[in-house]
Every structure is written in C-alpha cells, then in structure tokens.
Image (cartoon, rainbow, N blue to C red; front, side, top):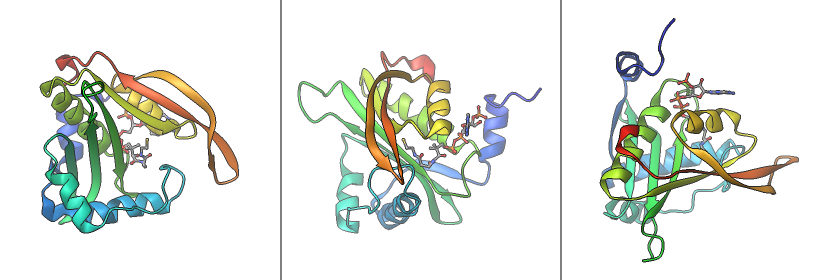
Length: 181
Ligand SMILES: CC(C)(COP(=O)(O)OP(=O)(O)OC[C@H]1O[C@@H](n2cnc3c(N)ncnc32)[C@H](O)[C@@H]1OP(=O)(O)O)[C@@H](O)C(=O)NCCC(=O)NCCS
C-alpha cells in the first residue's frame, strides 16, 4: 500500500509547486489567496481580508513571524502565517494560520507547509504552537492530528457558519520537538 507520508511520495506530490519563505513582493498574491479562501465562507472567521498590500508587506517583513507561500505558475496558491506572541508572557507561544486555494488541496501542500512551520518554531525556541479550527472542518482537524496537534479545548457554538453553530476547536503542539520535522 502506498505510504502517503514517505519523503518520496511527498516530493512527487509537490513537484509542480514551490514552497518558500514569502517576500514583500508576494503581498498581493497572499491577499488574493486569503480572499479566495475567505470568499468560500466556511473555513475562516473573516470573509474579507483586511490587510492592504502595504500592511501585508509589513507583516512579511516582521522577523518575529513566519510567512510561507506555495507557488504555482507565479501564483500564490497557499500561504501559512505563524505569529509569535508579542509579550514577554507569551513569546514562548505562536499561532498558526493556513489557507490553500481551492483546486490545490489534498495534494500534500498543507502537510508540507505545516511541517516547515513546526520546524521553524522549534528553531525559534517557541515551545507551543497553537491554532483554532471550526469543528465543521473535519479534514483540517484530521490533518492537524496527523501532524501532532492535540485538542486542548473547545468553545461550544462559538461561531455561526451559514445556518449552523460550530465549535471553536483549540489545538496545540506542546512541547514542540524537532523530531516533528
Ligand atoms: C486544511 C488545509 C490547510 C489542508 O491543506 P491540504 O494541502 O489540503 O492538505 P494535505 O493535502 O497536505 O493533506 C490533507 C489531509 O487531510 C485528509 N483529509 C482531507 N479531508 C478529510 C476528511 N474529510 N476526513 C479525514 N481526513 C481528511 C487527507 O486524507 C490528507 O491526509 P493524508 O495526507 O494522510 O492523506 C487546506 O485544505 C485548506 O486550506 N482548506 C481551506 C482553508 C482552511 O480550512 N484553513 C484552515 C483553517 S483552521
């Protein structure tokens, strides 16, 4: 049976895509990617991406944080943002957000980008990597579990998505270990 997590399979799946650190010149591409996923309305809290191109460039330049992009034919088709806590009290933590454009999902991009984010967090001596996900997003939750995240808490009926209330599932990797590479 095919082993989906093998290095060989991962690189084969990802062959047409380039995954790299974002540059300020990726700002508009990231905005378009985020807006495209927000327009689907069912995965992310906001439905309108609020950063301007200038604001997005500032985010990318923030050396405290991680911004990754997946590129296909010069188009940003996926992006990961990891924001480190800004206070002395939470600098050992960071929050991860990810969005892959429709049509580019289930090809291994999310797994690879999150693995890179975990590795980066470990290198920054971040101890705890957090994320929040709608309980309705079963595919994402399965992926996060596969990559080592555990559920830390649930806020019941925290969001109204379409006509349904969904829970806010808080997940974390703690402690981050380099073996998650
Ligand atoms: C969630 C998301 C980031 C995952 O990225 P991706 O590139 O599609 O993920 P991958 O291809 O690396 O892996 C998908 C995994 O989820 C699994 N999966 C997908 N749907 C599933 C489902 N309904 N039930 C169980 N597992 C599911 C796949 O089997 C695959 O696991 P495998 O590698 O072991 O086969 C991406 O789909 C996405 O951006 N979705 C829309 C936005 C979003 O939900 N963002 C996260 C908000 S918290």
